[in-house]
Length: 133
Image 1: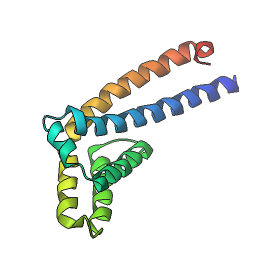
Image 2: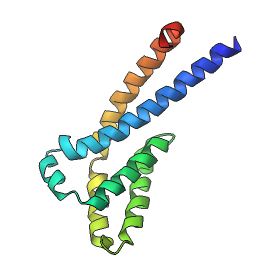
Image 3: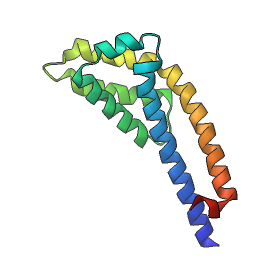
Image 4: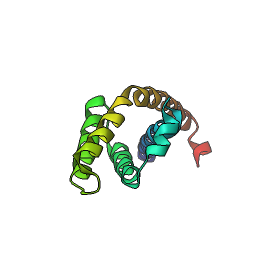
């Protein structure tokens, strides 16, 4: 009986990790391909922004719960770090910060869709534990 509980928690952890990774990927993909300004965004992307976005995505994956406050804190921390880099400076970092913060509603919407799909996958896995191996 105890082993089934462990498998259930393993499935939950795996589902949460998967959902976090997918949310992060969606956020980046939306910025570069889904937004109305996607073509312009791809042209504007500088090397430091790719690194900064990767840091934001990495921190989003580690976040226990994705809320607007948590998202904005992560964006602020990363933006502050890059604002101190000589080649970037405060102006570019502030533009980066405001650009990412503008996309919260779209990211939240995608995260909710992914979360509901993740819950369905977890429910199916719990119902059919032998098929998930």
